[in-house]
Image 1 (cartoon, rainbow, N blue to C red):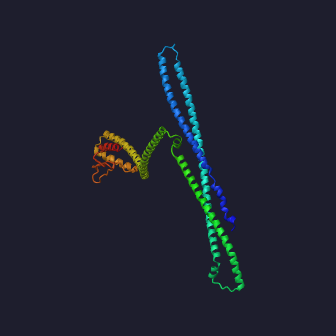
Image 2 (tube, helix red, strand yellow; image 1 turned 60 degrees about the vertical axis):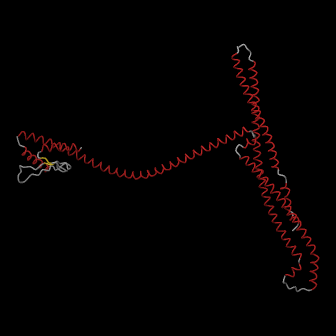
Length: 423
């Protein structure tokens, strides 16, 4: 291994040990920000003084106007005009100071952008330092490995006789070869030891230099990290611009008040969040109740379908019953007319009631034989075989009533009333 290959890592020292330009830029920017802060403080103090003067001039102008209103019209009012001119001048100065403050704030924003760019550059420098650190560690490991190999070679060269004795080899050589090898070893041993010592010393010196360089790079890396953390905390801090630009107690109080108002807003928002959570829980319970009601509604729908089918069947039966009722009413009306005709016929011929009932029943039986009705007959009268002159009691055709009567007229009246009531 040659000296060029051993001393190759030392060529990168100049790039790492060079002074970092971002630090200088950072110091420059800090000086400029301090100067800007001082200028802004003076400008704000002047602005406050000018505001006080403007207020005094406004008060003087108001008093002058009041005095001018009390004085007659021909009296000259030069005082108010001079005060107005002074007020305009102070307003112009105030406007100039406001423009100056706006320029300073714009300059501060540009400087803040420069800060951010420097932070990016420092991040890149940190990454390059990390990469250089890793490469240096690799080189150190490589050099230490080479050093161990050279130390092993030195040990093997310093004691060749002991090494030869230690090997259990049968040296079957002649005396000339043995003497030649001994002479070669004696002649080459000091040169080899000197070369090995020089190489070891050079490697140790290189290793020391590399360790110093590595420690220097580590210190620089720590400094960059500290500066970066300071910048990040300064940028992430609330109201950092105001605290950097100005250290005025009034503005500090204003910042404290704004922070208190923000804390109050956060508290109110947290209370609103708790109330919203309570409303959400109520809505969840209501949703669960509605889901249970929905399940019940499914059961109720099936019941409604059953009830509807029952209702339709009942409606059909009612329609059939009403049709039967109408048919029965029509038959009763016909029977009433026949009864009237028969009663008139009987009264005209002077026939008594028992014979009337017998003849009526005989005529009805004949009519039933001729035209039998489709349903149950209205009257169920059975003629006795033993004595045809005596009749059985008449029964109401309504199955719910089944009331018995002795004569026909009360039966007719009752049938009419019973059917009317069943409507």
